[in-house]
Amino acid sequence: MNKLAYISSIVLAATFAACDNFDLPNPPGQENQEPVIFESSNLAIAQGPEALDLKAANNEGVRPVVANITKLEGLSAPYSVAFELEMSNTEDFEKVVTVSTIVDGDNIVVTPDVVNGLIYSNFTRDPKPLTVYGRIAAFAVNEGGNVKTRLGGTDDYYYGEGYVYTVTPFDPATVIEDQYYLVGNFCNWDVTKGYPVNQVIAGSPYDQPVFNVKIDIDEKMIENGGFEWKLVPASAAAGNNWAGAYGAEGTSTEGTLVASAEAKTDAGVIDAVGQYLIEFNLLEKTYKIGFAYDFLYAPALGNTTTTDFTKIARLYTNDYNNYKGVVQINRQFWLTCQPSNTSGVIYRPDGDSETNEVSHITTGKMKVDPESTDRMKVPGYQLYFLDVNLLKLQWSATPVNVINVIGAFNGWNVEETDATAMAPDTSSKPANYRKWTSKEIRFNEPGEYKFCVNNAWNISFGGEEGNIVENGGNLVMTEAGTYVFTLDFTTSPYSLQIVKK
Image (cartoon, rainbow, N blue to C red):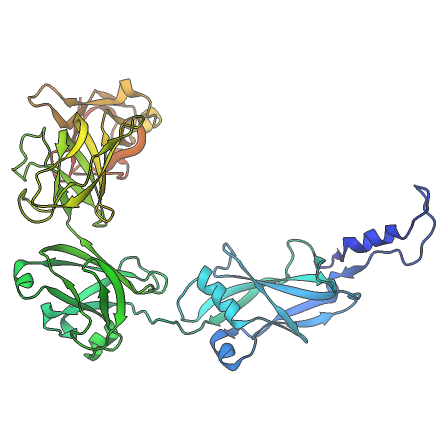
C-alpha cells in the first residue's frame, strides 16, 4: 500500500477559513496552506504471537499482543494512530466481529474479556482452542477523538488478511459433556445402566446444548412410586460415581436442573403412564417433559368408524411436539395418543373454536381430559389438514378444497387448476375425502412434481410413492407419458398410486 490518506476534512476547512478576504478564483497567497497528509507506506505492522491465550492473560491481568508496529513515520500532530482488529472464524471472513485495540508502545493489544465475549456471542461457546483469522485496519485520530480517518483507503488492511491466531478462551461457567445418561429407580440407581440421553443437533455441546431421551412408562412403574430420574454425565457413568449429576427442581412437566452429586436426592418424578420425551438444556440448566407418541389418532364423525383404530386417521410428527395430517371430518373430532376413546391420554376441547372468515382456518385450544365426551368443532363436512401443537395445547384445521399435481411439466404453476386438479371420491356413501384422483396428465419428458393444496404452497405433499409426507421432497417421473395419480390418505403412511395410460 502506497496511498495518500487525507487526515482531516477539518484541516481543509480551517485552511479556507483563514482566507477571509479574497476574490475567486485567485485568492491571495497563503503560507502553510497544504492539508495534512500521511504516506501510508510510512506505517507497517506485523502479527504478534500466534497463540492468543485469553485465559492465561486474564488470569495474569495483562493484555495480549495481537500485532506489533514495526514502522511509523511522518504522522503530524495532533494526530495519533489507532487500530481495529477484525476477527472471523472462517478464512473468507464471511462473519466478522470488530475488536477495539489499545496501542501500548510498539504493541497493539486487546482486552481479554472483550475478545472472549465477542467469540462467545458470535462464533462459539466451546472452551477448546480455536483458529481465528484476523486483519487490521489503521486510522488517524485527532487529539479530541472526534476525527477518525482510515489510512490507506476504506477497504485496506495492513499486511493484508494473513493473520491467523490460535485462541484459548476462558474456562466455561458450566462444563457440558458430549453424552449424558438418565439414571433412576428404573435401573436401581446404577449409574452404569442408565438410558442414553443424546444431543438433539450435532455439534459442540456448548453451542448445541439441548439433549433429549424418549421413555415409556408403564403401570408397574407407577405402582412402584412413579418414574424417578436424575441426569448423569458420561464421565460419572464411566467412573461409577455421581460427580456432575443433576437433579430436578420443578414440576412433572418442566423445571430447573440442580447440581446433585448423590443418588436418589433431588430426583425428578413422572407419575402417569405414557410415552414421554424429556428435553434438557445443559446451558440454561432446564428441563421440559412432554408426551412423545409417534402419532396421534384423530377419531372424527364422518369417517366410517370412530372405534376401529386400524382405520382411524393419524397425525404424524418429527419432534413429538407438532403433529400434522389430513382427517375427514363431519364437523366434530377429538384426539387420542393410544387406540382408546375411554382411557389414557385423550385431548378434548378447551373452550370454543373460532373460524377465520378470510382464510376459513379454524383454531382452538385443547386439554387432556379422558373423562369428557366433548369434541373439537369445524364448520363443514370435508377433508381438513390438522396442525396440532402439544406444548401449546393448540390446534388448527385448514379445509382441503382442492389438490393439484404441480411440476416441471406445467412450469410449477399452482394456478392451473383445470388441467391438474384432483378430486375426492364423492360417489361413495359416505363420501371418501381421504382418496383423491387426478385427471389424465401428460408428461412430455421426465421431470419432478409434487402435490399442493388450495392452489398454494402453504400445504404440499411429496416424498416417495409409498411414503407421502407433508412438505416432502419432489417426486420424480422417470418416463414421458400420460398418467393418472391417486393420493391415498387412508394408508399409514400416506401413499401414491400411479397408472400410466
